[in-house]
Amino acid sequence: MRIFLSYAQEDSPVAAALGRELTKAKIQVWNPSQEVEPGENWSLKIGEALERADAVIVLFSPNSGRSPWIQREIEYALTSPRLEGRLIVVEVKPTKHMPWILRKLQPIRLYESPTKARKSLLSRVEHLAKASANAQ
Image (cartoon, rainbow, N blue to C red; front, side, top):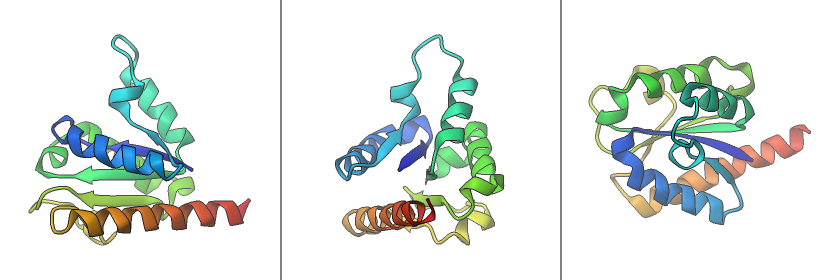
């Protein structure tokens, strides 16, 4: 199972912590800040990673809500037939202006109960991994 982790730079500490937890659970996590080297074509690397991803986790916060990069990554996940039903939204901080379509995806609210949210995230990812394994 390969996960593309989408987040605003300001949410890097949260992304790193969740990435470690997913990796411990034997899930491959593509984290742009760890995978793209200085001077590399950022857009190309992100596009390739999205193409290879089995699911996308977006860490949504007021910062990511203002990011055109995050908006593009969400748009890709929502419109790619291969990723249908494979976008997981984690609300890092209370966010008034989350797009309605993301709210309909039942975001995991990390700020309410981090322990419960992490368990819920792992459960959703494991469910997707099982579904992928059964489809093959």
